Image 1 (cartoon, rainbow, N blue to C red):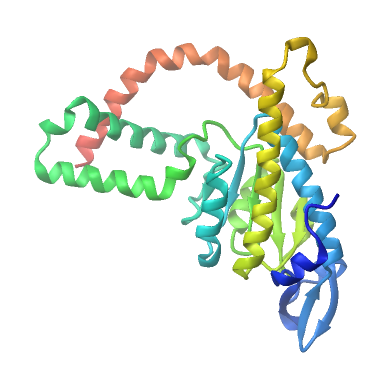
Image 2 (cartoon, rainbow, N blue to C red):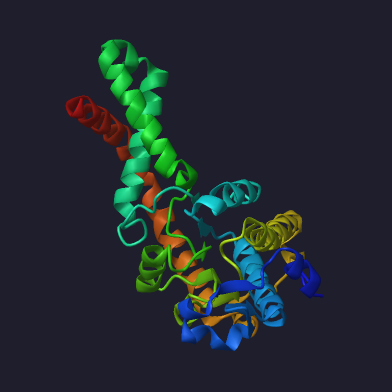
Length: 296
């Protein structure tokens, strides 16, 4: 059964594209007609693409992986943040930090610095700082929270990213493509869908359209998380075997299967390194605190 229908998409204005003179020829397969100089998106194809994307996201969530949502345009910020928080997935709704994916270790250091400031407040280190220094550290913490707070729990690269506007978030898409991370995206008639593994032809400017599609995908993620929890509660011999790689390959896009497999390999390597990281964590925090004081 489809996750949405023609009428629901029509009511949300998903079918409205851009002016004909702004179109991208690569979107021709998804355009139904032109009316008053505006391209109209074929909603029948949108329904199919939404189902494909929702199914893939459900499997990613069920496998325990993360999907990064990116929506920095004004009309999408609050909608995406509100929806994504419900399924506990990372998101970026402020300015995209360049190199967030391709230079991920540096981003993680910034997140750790935010954590070190929190520990300074908790262990009494703040009392040794002057009022001016405390104010500067607090402002630094607020800035980091605004830009990186939504990805604080993202300890490794995401298995996929979802983008609301391909044109606006072209840097994020480029970084994901460079690393082989599958991209889900809402593509309007002025966008290029050829570089997107899971394009969803839709109006990416109307808040109702963004809310509807994001809500459907988040619902699919929630289903995947619930199934994962249900599988964990089963006895080892009774667990569902439907998430094996061989069966995934018959159902999902190859890029999704590869992303899940690579994540599993990374987890095994990181598990071996956890003990060493825990030993060095105290020294790193002390060094970061010293750096913060030197910056002041």
